[in-house]
Structure formats: structure tokens, C-alpha cells
Image 1 (cartoon, helix red, strand yellow):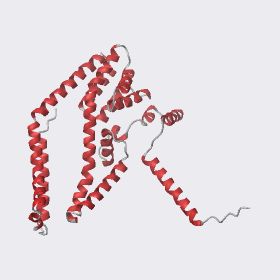
Image 2: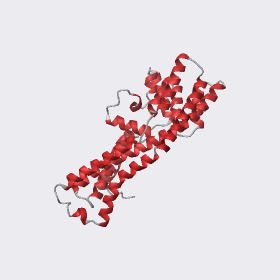
Image 3: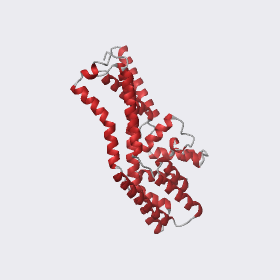
Image 4: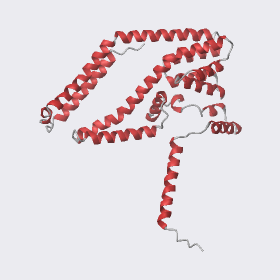
Length: 322
């Protein structure tokens, strides 16, 4: 006969702690990463339609409220979500804010080893707020630049499909399957909206709001006018693609002409920082002897503010929009 020892209470506690951590992890994952398979999404849509849901309620599964709600401009979280969508980032804003807090803490810990705490705190706060925003803005600009470069080819592909008799939804599907991201993903969303019951004009209008570029707005208006009044859409798309290419050529010429001014502005902005770092490395006592003076932080903040203002003014002087 096997003698079973009494189950230790400590092992039971460890098992309960493990189950609690596992349940907490699953709960947070379900809260921040609401993912489902294509079959689950299809079943959920069918259940909604079976229970009498309208087409708009079903299409809300595809639409991001940050991109489609006209009254969603005031909220900070909504603006952050809109920026993340335009940058192509699929993380939750909560994780982005958590990363910014960790970045601020790390920057504060590093800065306290070189500067006093009253300087380390604003420096780490500025880094925690500006670095994620600048990173998302750079990703957004790169993604929209690539999408704008791909848009004329997508319009030509749609125009060729329309000339041979294909409907608009089919030509959109060809762009979604034949062209790479980001234009392929965006036109895939347009195709999904059309397949799930939305009209073509509304789908392209949502696309223009997601992308938020002039070329996308022109495309949305063209599709909307043709959808309401009729006309030769293939010719409209050909003309629009040529206009977009001509605007790209003009933009490159303007950048080439203003390259000297942009380089001068960058040098004048970085020059005070380079001078300060060179003095700190070669002669640390130059500023070290006056750091304990009560007027030192005041003049330091004034110089930093003037340097930032100079950089912004020079950037505005050499930036052209048309």
C-alpha cells in the first residue's frame, strides 16, 4: 500500500499564485490585444446580422473610431491612436505610454550621473514625451511618403482593370493583392468594407481620413463624384495619377533648390550644442565653477529655449507646402 504524504500547504499557495498570475496575464492580453481569427470574426458578424444588427454596426468592426469619428479630435488618447494608425503601429496606446514612462525613468537615472536632479527631471520628462512622438511622426511620414509614391501605380492598375470591364471593387482587390504594403493593406481595408456592405464612396472616404493626404482626398472626391453622377472613372484615375506624379516631380525640385537653406538651418541649430559639448569635454571647469550659482539654471533654460526657438523658426523658413 502506497502511503501518500499530506499535501504541503506551501505548494498549494504557489499553485494558486501561479494560476492568479496566469489569469491576470490572460486578462491583460484580452484587454489590450483584442485579436481574433478570421473565422471568429466572420462568425461574430453573422451572429450580429442574425440578431438584427444594421450594416453600420457590422462595419464598425472594421472602422477605427479614432479615424472615423468627426468629434474625436479633442481627446489626447484619440490623437495618439490616430497617429499610431497612420504610422502603421499595431500596439495599444497603453503599452506606448508604459514605454514612455520606462524611457523617462531610464533617462532620469542616466542623467543624474552627469547633472543635478533639478536638471535631470525636466530633461527626462522632455525625452519621455518627445522621443515616442518624434519616432511615431517619423514612421508616419515614411509610411505616408511610401504610400503616396505607390498611389499613382495603384490608380493606373485600377484604370486598366476598369477599361477591360471590371467593377471598382474587383480593381481594388487587384491592388490589394498585387501591390506591397502600405498601399496593399490600405486597399485591402477598402475591399473589406465594400465586401461587408459599405458603398465604394464611403470606403474611399474612410481611406482618405486614415491616410490624411491631399492625393488621397483627391481620390476620395473623384470616386464620390463618379459614384453619384457617373462618368468615365478610368480616365479620371489616369489624369489623377499623372497629376500626382507631376506634383512629386515639383516637390523634388523644390527640395533640391532649398537644400542649402535646410542644411544651414541644421548647422546653426546644432552649433550651440556642439560648442557646449566641446567645452565640457576639453575644459570641464569652465561651467563647473558656476554651476552652484543660483542664476545658472535660469540662464541655462533661457539658452535652451532660444536654441529651440531658433531651430523651429529656421525649419519654418525652409519648409514649403503646396
